[in-house]
Image 1: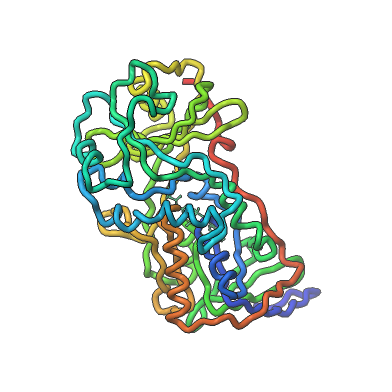
Image 2: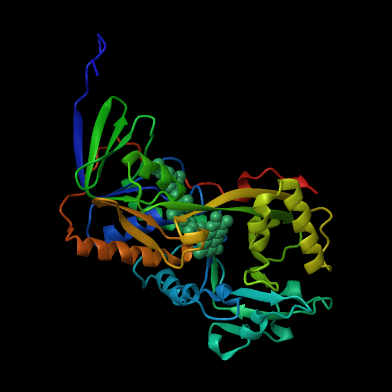
Length: 412
Ligand SMILES: Cc1cc2nc3c(=O)[nH]c(=O)nc-3n(C[C@H](O)[C@H](O)[C@H](O)COP(=O)(O)OP(=O)(O)OC[C@H]3O[C@@H](n4cnc5c(N)ncnc54)[C@H](O)[C@@H]3O)c2cc1C
């Protein structure tokens, strides 16, 4: 392109790192921690705020897959994930592959309940030997306060799963590497294919840089679709599974973390609880959020309120406020848009030095870390560059707001 009169072309300065990671959700931040503690120099590029997209929208459940047994049997998904709560607990104690000390645990258990009269394969299976050690039936005296009302007639189980506060998780992963997390503005940056991988051109003021790496990792959640398109890569392909989550903000200060089991193979409702000032937000997913994709926000609020009135007739919802969150889960494409069972990391078609990664679940991100470490060994990629980065490149530390902080509330 000809240079307009009066302009000069700033020469590109080359920055070399071992690993360049694009996207700072749980996947990118976890991978940054894993590779840096293995001695690689690495940089993470984020275009918005850390965790934008799925991670801050998630329910924060670190689960062992019991919810996938509701069809009445152990499945591939429930087995692949079974060890994950124990793995995360080791990390929270500072004894795992990533140091998560400082991450806030919202609850160290999860409940599963079925309302009176629901007889499903699931309830029989939950009580069976196959799940011993992962599920405990509770005595009435051990019920959490919200279920102690005499009007509650269902049965209640306790799972070994835990719930974490995702903004504090992101902050714990960000802090030790604050100098390696950069803001990227794609209005001026470019991702380009090389013979075996990808380079990133980026600017800071008048300076232009070319970021070269031994391995480029695309971990941008839904944004991987656009990055693959920019590289002209067809495989792997991505699928998006939409949801519409429901939020209800109220003054019943019960913090509840539970799945409600219906007669179907998926939880009828999954509830996590989050404090918002002096009130409590119940964040509702499960079948309600999957079916809610086809509803207007008003219709979903009506359905959700009906559901809560039916399940908790002893609670008063008259002064509650409501909001919804349309959001998409980004995953590797599966036949029939099925939910994948495992974390995914694979090279882009024809580019062994550029991989695409989707954890598919927050819970499975440790598996994603292992997949990357294995891939580095398989490709014989060893630490080769030092850690210096130009001071002029803008650092990024902002964490995305939680959905209830960004919501527009309405009374039903
Ligand atoms: C409603 C909901 C509830 C969930 N609940 C749970 C749960 O309880 N337990 C569980 O295990 N899993 C849960 N999940 C799944 C889990 O949240 C996701 O699998 C996980 O958060 C995905 O993380 P990620 O880092 O791949 O993507 P994201 O969290 O979406 O992060 C992608 C990041 O990349 C950035 N980005 C995008 N494009 C670019 C670009 N071009 N350049 C630079 N940066 C870019 C984005 O700004 C964002 O920060 C839930 C998902 C949803 C939607």
